[in-house]
Image (cartoon, rainbow, N blue to C red):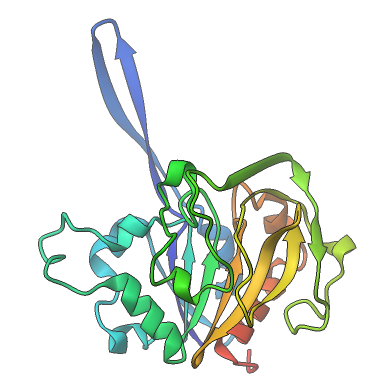
Length: 252
């Protein structure tokens, strides 16, 4: 199985003020993708290419055939604007990448869409995925709100709502880690299923759209919301099962 994993990456810079003057200093890269990437790379039969958000603006596949070289696409903590980089020289005229992702799903590709400050609506609406072609192939609606993040620094407990599904059949609520935040999702779409909730919002949901499948996980697979999940003994198996289901591939 070949997977393209995009996002969970930031650049941190510090701004200093000294009297009437100020200056900005680059500090470090924030590689939030490392826990999930490391877990998946240990799984035999699975190849993962990670693309950070900066690279995605120019290097995300520009054709359906190029994207279909992958069986599954993971989008996590990535703004809509990253895939609509109109300020790059070849962006206009160019491919509508959001429509491309929808076609990828409709023609048999698997999409795993994860939460964070920059997905769903995200921090002050910067994620801005509501109303996009990508939302059209998600199992849940994205709320048209200014900010859909819910911070749970004390930890929010996950409740399983469906235990017959392949993704949750071997899980029980007592074994699941808490999450420290999530994006509050909208309504479950017709024909889709909610497998787990937190605070009565859909945390893990699945759906089928034409020939493809999608999974929406409304929290983060890594830091900070996924602090306990990264240490969970079932972490690798959980994400591997998601990829197996979304690609209808049971060979891993």
